[in-house]
Length: 228
Image 1 (cartoon, rainbow, N blue to C red):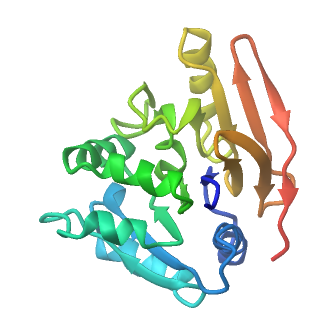
Image 2 (image 1 turned 135 degrees about the vertical axis):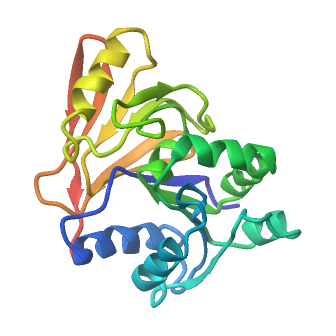
């Protein structure tokens, strides 16, 4: 059986080409030439724009489909998820997304898919949802620390670390105040976890990095630059 894998991405690249390189890397983790991929745009309220955008980025690289939770999820939600090679989760409102997933039991389906070897990946909300805790703008630009993540990965996570000026000081403030220690990713940077072990950090942006955030300090984690 394939090992569980997650690619947790802090944000898109500076260009469409950079972002495409990062998403192509995510698809390569399936080991399939043309993988079956399920898009989950719940954090974008299943918006047509989000679905079109992902199809523009990934449609030529995989067999792409999507699942909507509005007005209700499909009856074959579990079967559809477990039949994929990868599942991609859009950015957006992470807190709302997690609440909707739990109401419909999708949190348990995702864990089953992950444990069976379906690669899980996503940007922003699609990065932080896999952790126990996360920093989010789900409630406004002031940024909140939430401890209701899926918990596939331990600790906390913060995306857009160099892309939004409030992220670093707010995450530091939360962790120094007792919030779970964790990791942060610049835009264009992805954490590749195999099971629950951090295997590698990758980036599509030269010079971008990831960080371990601990009480009283932080540690920079160099990232392998992906070729375009």
